[in-house]
Amino acid sequence: MDNLKAPKAPKHWDQRFLVIASHFAGWSKDPSTKVGAVAVRNRRILAQGYNGLPAGVHDSDARLKNRETRLEMTVHAEMNCVAMAAQNGVSLVGATMYVWPLMTCSRCASMLIQAGINNVVVPDYVEPQRWQDSFDMARAMFIEAGVSVSRIPMNGPINPMEDSVNDEWTESIA
Image 1 (cartoon, one colour):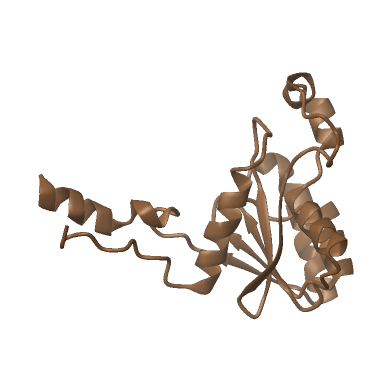
Image 2 (tube, rainbow, N blue to C red):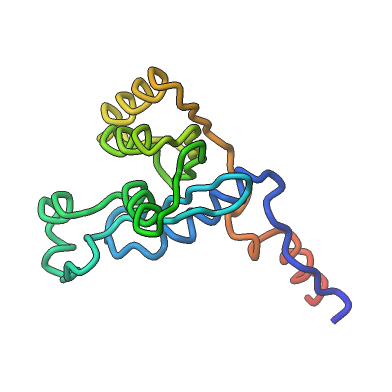
């Protein structure tokens, strides 16, 4: 038992909050795309959200499996995050929005700008081509509104429990 060590957390705060956003993405019932968002100010989480149907609307298999219906009814993670903050009386002015695993779409960019978000942080992954026009429009709006966008490299596993420490521990007991 002396060999057991706590898993290492990502070294950079942006990576840490992206890992948290990835956790919330896992709560989504969307069968094709799971997105999570976390609003942060001064290293404190203000609100979180994930993509899904609105609260009180039944997420039936028929709705979730029908792409057109799902796309029309889904509230994006960023919008859910802003809505949760509003419901709880939390201002997002000056906050940073961490979004996993995609760049913010143009509709969500409008909402984040209106909410006073100053920074948007996304992982540095390849963006799906089918949404590229929306991502490009979002970037243009962010630039015009003075909102910074950062793409953070996520080296290694995003789950700290899958860190190399566990590999070393597994090797030591083999």
